[in-house]
Length: 131
Image (spheres, rainbow, N blue to C red):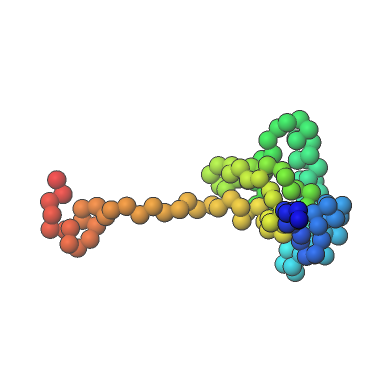
C-alpha cells in the first residue's frame, strides 16, 4: 500500500483547480469579509500579481507596503517581503495562508522580553542604595 502525502484543499477545491480560477471567481470561496475586500480591490490584487511575476522573471525581490491585500492562489510559492512599519519581513506564501491578509503575516509589534526589575522599580527595592 502506497503512502501519499495528503493533498491540500481549500473549500473542497485542489490547488490546481484554484490556480486556474480568476481572482473574482476565487472570491466566491472566501468568507464574507474577505470576499467583499477581494471584489472591491480585485484590480489592485491583479496588478500586484502581475508586478510580482515580472520581478520574479528579473530575479528581483518582491517588496510591498500593501498589508491589506488578500492572499490568492496565484501568490502561492512566492517569497514576498512585507513592510511592518520598521523593516521588511520575508514571508513565503503557502496554501494554508489563502484568504488571509499580508498584514497578518508581518506583526508590527515586537514581542516583549521582561527582564529583572531595576533598583527603585518596586517598593521593596526603594530602600536599597541606587549606587
